[in-house]
Image (cartoon, rainbow, N blue to C red):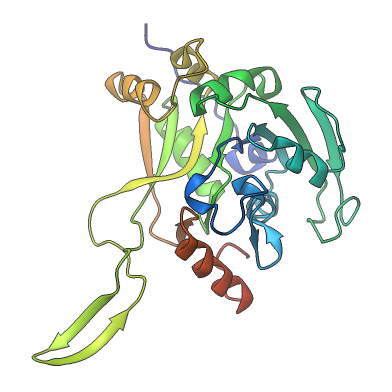
Length: 273
């Protein structure tokens, strides 16, 4: 049976501040270990601050400051960052205000952070399912703890409400792994180190989901959200795409990390508005 999407008619900007933002923080990040192997991937620093903190600040600046962090690999590092030294119980609530617990600014709006242990080997679908008690019954934002963007979250949410599907995925054109040359005969006339792909969208990892998504996740920790659940939702015509043509960059490799650090160190980080 296809779950019926939620079609509430409230104002999307006002509602955004009440949405929870679920961040998947439990992966091992094996391809980025040449940067740091002693912390989980979301805690790898960009210009001296964990990428997770950059990401949460980005959401909070747009009014989304109620977070559910799905922990796994080296989750204690994230717990310690938020002041929960040595604690392993589920569903811990941490309220962060301006400079209240961190040695760096957060935002002027207090953050509410739920830290949820979702297992060391659990796949992404299983992590979302395990966090359901903290997510509740309303729609929610969903993302990964290793990517940054300048996406307009209000526009993303407005699109999701208008289209009325179970899941909205952000569609982005990734930067090329190779430099792009412009040439006139034998003479190079231009070089772009990080050109954006001219065709073909990939998932940018910034989602909005209805509670009906749990009907697709099953009951196994081995469920990968990006495979069977999304494939079934696509088959049921329950997935919409929000096209984002602006900045987007994941941190999968050492080169990605270098690129993000270069932007941040120059004060040219697009994810900081």
